Length: 139
Image 1 (cartoon, helix red, strand yellow):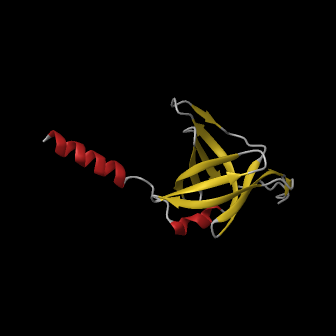
Image 2 (image 1 turned 90 degrees about the horizontal axis):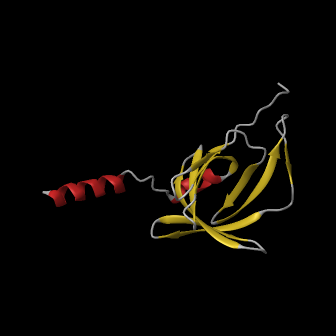
Image 3 (image 1 turned 180 degrees about the horizontal axis):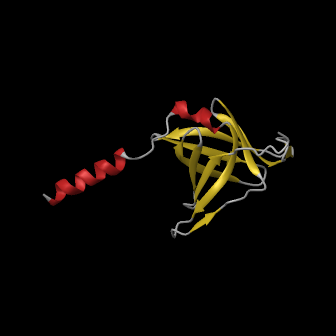
């Protein structure tokens, strides 16, 4: 009987996972701000105000991420620096493979929707993002 409970619990945990689908990947396009970071020890860092946000653009299985600073009139200040990445699927999990002149790293997409996404780094650090909502004071 104990084994039945364990199996039911495991099936429930697997069933509750937010599985990312290939059709969800275009949701990555757009402006994102970090909401919080969860560290392997369970501690968290909340971000209530962000002076820079990420612009992500994906086409097929390639894309880039660029840091931008939003202005109050709805425009953005940016540089020409961008982190290029490729997206690949491994055992049903989508991964972002970043490569720059200085470094290479991978992040697993563990949740992705129109307004939120979560990635986990190779160091088991979870980054929680929310869709950026610009503040326009000129209206």
